[in-house]
Image 1: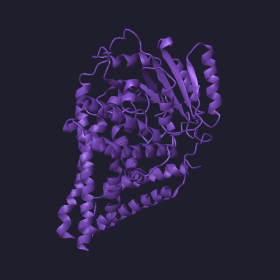
Image 2 (image 1 turned 30 degrees about the horizontal axis):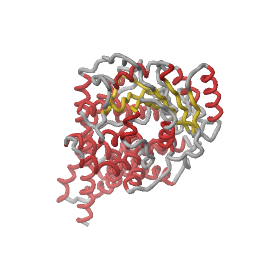
Image 3 (image 1 turned 180 degrees about the vertical axis):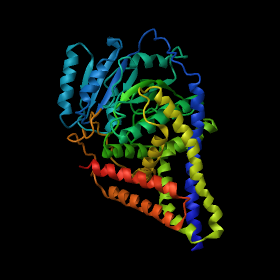
Image 4 (image 1 turned 90 degrees about the vertical axis):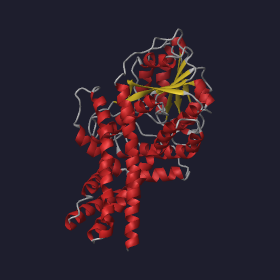
Length: 496
């Protein structure tokens, strides 16, 4: 019995140490980001003497609710017409095809160079579509927008000159990435919490990595690639679910530089239903694990500074945090009873639980910095910080079962299909997602019911702690019960 207690406490402690390491990494990125913001200015470089040939690629798959909005926004981009080429990379199997054909014909009649590209098979999914499109264009630069994006007319004018900043020939700048804006942040609690988490990535992580000279990542959309960079790095590959992260690491390991512009936003729609969010989360977390499996060894064999290799390791393995959260969560309820039965020799070890609260200190600094930056771009400023932070932490914990499965599948190399995130064109109006259902999988799977059972499990942990007067794990169980409860509630609600 004593050995079992030691194993439980030991595993719990290892998970907490991993979380603390992740938290400290985010704290360091926050310090770097704050240093960058202290001297960040809108000092846009001058326009190049001659604007390069630029292709705008729009990869689509069954996007009937947003495709016309996307095409209209991209045709309004200001750029020399004779240097611009729009490619609609349409793998759709529904009425999207007819909608695209009509919009393309309309703009072709106005003299725009815009093509409707259809492949006989959806080989390679998004990566395959992007690679195929490159064979049909002469663009030197390639801008990419997913179907839910609505770029501002001045997007290209504000981004393209950065390829030539401090480099007359722009020879080693491979990517210019911009920040994502949110078209429907206030649609629901679900979208508000997503925006809160994404803002931390775009306002802190990307800025901090750039300031420290560490590896960045193209975010799949809302950015521009130099064609020579894509080709030199080996082009797009579909052997991971995050083709953007994969190509980003291949390019930077080849010596290409990435530029990130937090001052330029590319507005986009957040997933408004739980099945859409889970689809996106599965792809991101599994893809990151697959990319880590593919490139982590190369990163450590490279000549990059030790700090860059360490940051790249946490970057590629950050989805493993969900596994640590899940293991820690499942073990936490038995630990209430281990404490209660009076294992005095182990009692000092239980102070490890304090590391969980300690890990929240740098994370609070991290999210607070992102929230402050985001407030400057919102009118009105939005809801308070403390409530959003606690709900976001709880919600992230509630996704740990779903995301842990994705991470483990990625680490062991299990192949799964690329399931795109449904875009429903929802900007306001509760319940408006009804009638626009695009099912990516069974809405109520066995995993969903297990999430409901875990919510009950952590409620039991709360009750046990109160009954036994063991309060050390009470905050953890409150967050876990809230998070799994929210995930289970939205899964049921959006299955209607």
